[in-house]
Amino acid sequence: MAKLFYSIKNHVLVGLAIGLGSPLILGSIAWYLMHHTTVFKKADLLLIGCVAVNLVWVNYFNKINKENIGRGIVSATFLCAFVFFFYKIMQEV
Image 1 (tube, helix red, strand yellow):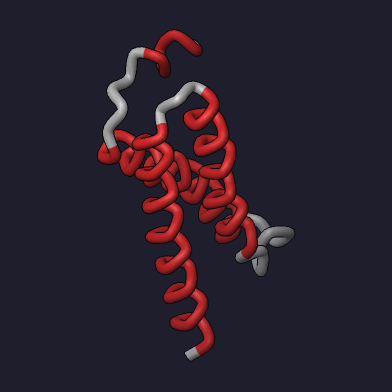
Image 2: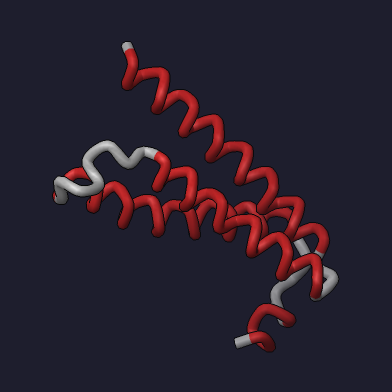
């Protein structure tokens, strides 16, 4: 699998896609757990954990010298953080 990531082109848009895709997949799982179980009913911080996975991706792509992909992932992380911020604001209103 590591060779798969070595062959990816070093573009910011690729990093943006990875940075938005992984929290989206994990966030949908967390969303399902939040709405279908009683244990995770008030666990909004699960969504932040889904965004925090991007730190692992940034670390990995920086180690294999794909800095532009890392920049795209960091940009996506900020976008996801703003979405979570507005989600929390709308919940309190």
